[in-house]
Length: 390
Image (cartoon, rainbow, N blue to C red; front, side, top):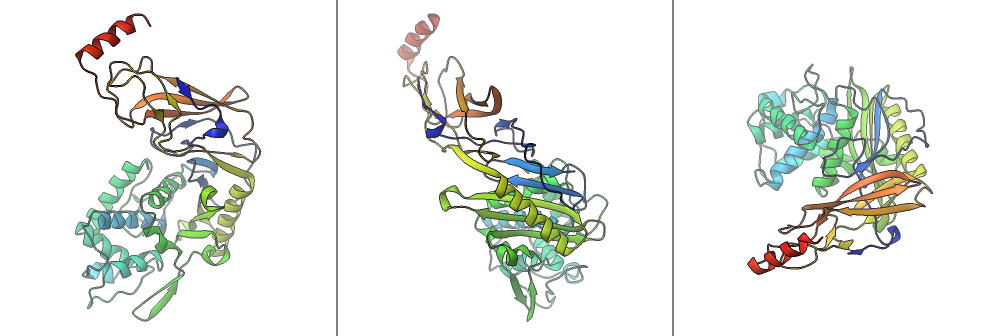
């Protein structure tokens, strides 16, 4: 069996403290040796989007009122509707009385007009317009209540296990809640699934009906590497911010996501988010261990139309560790034995175990990279005999 000779030639991705899908790797590395700075917030999470690792957290699983951070899920469903061609950016949307009279922040849509979807998206994202959010929800589901049910279903699909949505805006409701952990999952999914549409979140202002309102995310002015995402505030929630930044050269850039909930002011949520992001970039490095669809081994396979099968990973594999902690890594590949056709691309065929100083750092599923159909009668018969002597 041909095997990648060293970690320097290839590299790894992993799932982590966040409850990401089970198809991701299992990581047991401790990051506690680099304690996070004091963060003046009731809950927070710092998440590395490349590796899927949580670098720091506090009260990450506690339920909180998400306030306007809710609109990230509203946007997710709007972007999905656009992708599915259930909406178009130029499509006009009627403004209901419920949308027009929405409480809280607004983009001030006129019920006598029928605004297009794209300005409503900008009003929802840049101006945090509750009226825009409701109008978009009604355009997709017919009513905000039905749209909220879709929001909760999508949250469950994404792995947000402690989240419930009752509206599209984030206005207070006892059954409307989420966690810092779940909101990090949502932010990561939004960036991953809609990389072009998230460009709206870096717009610093938007004008509608001759009313210009600035984006409430102050970090857009203070840190040029920040390109989103969303602020939120209610009396119960406090001042909240989900921020994301991308730093580094194009081929080695890292994206971090910070979720800060329950600070005492607009200034505080900005400062604490900046503190978390700087901590993540200053004290941690991410390295790509293996490239997507790059063969790492070609073990023997039986009863197939060929005698060997290419194995690898169905995504880039990254690992985040404290700086200068990547030395002494060892990779061990264990494959299912014997490998018997048929095998399809993406089908699990083994596990790559990454260790350091005899401690397991990660276990990453290895999959088939090619299709190996079942051989004909004679081929299967010959391999059946060979298997008797293995």
